[in-house]
Image: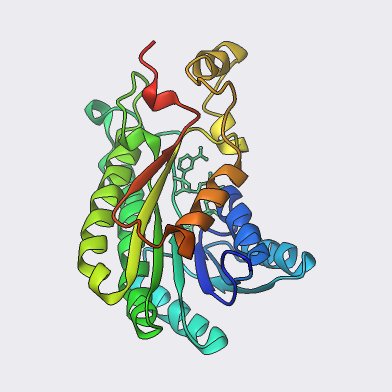
Length: 255
Ligand SMILES: NC(=O)c1ccc[n+]([C@@H]2O[C@H](COP(=O)([O-])OP(=O)(O)OC[C@H]3O[C@@H](n4cnc5c(N)ncnc54)[C@H](O)[C@@H]3O)[C@@H](O)[C@H]2O)c1
């Protein structure tokens, strides 16, 4: 028996690195996956990869900031799959221009919150009633280890948005527990995607960060996918309201 047999899942931001790895893992574990992304091409690439490994997937193009688009996307998934059991709110942005609150650009701050926080809220608002109607299920939210730790190279809008996702996760869990919906979050440390690598301008900057990782390596998209899959599955059936950090030990490391 696989972890997500017969589950109907939505993965947002599923055209990107972690969302794609999660869609592939969810599908390998038996789920039908709605691959939701702002980018049509990226969503279809993920769908092709899922189908290529024998899984079932559907591309849904929507901007998680836009309530009309989110409502329509959720309705399209319900029409195609007959319901929803799992929502993985993975879509998020971490712009290189995000710096200290002292130098914050308010428009950029709002954009980051709009996608990372308000997008999580909107997708949950529209998908959760269907999860309840299906008799219960799971929501998995995407936080970050940067919500757990301060940093001398700040990304304050991002950290604040992901901290808010953590708070929302707890509140959703308490409200939805009696209806059989578990809500948890994952908080990954640096996962080496091309976008994250661009934060390390030179080998020294990269090594500085690597030296902080007791397990001696950066994260991989599959690390996040594995945890998201576990949290979405019945193996986590008594876990709710939690944010699980996966960071190779960075947040336990004083020096
Ligand atoms: N990569 C890391 O090191 C890391 C660490 C901690 C947390 N995270 C979080 O994991 C999630 C995925 O990160 P990633 O590294 O795969 O990023 P990514 O940029 O590879 O993927 C993000 C995806 O989200 C989509 N997206 C962006 N805005 C959207 C919107 N408004 N509506 C719908 N889709 C939208 C993008 O098109 C993209 O496909 C993000 O929430 C990110 O903050 C990443």
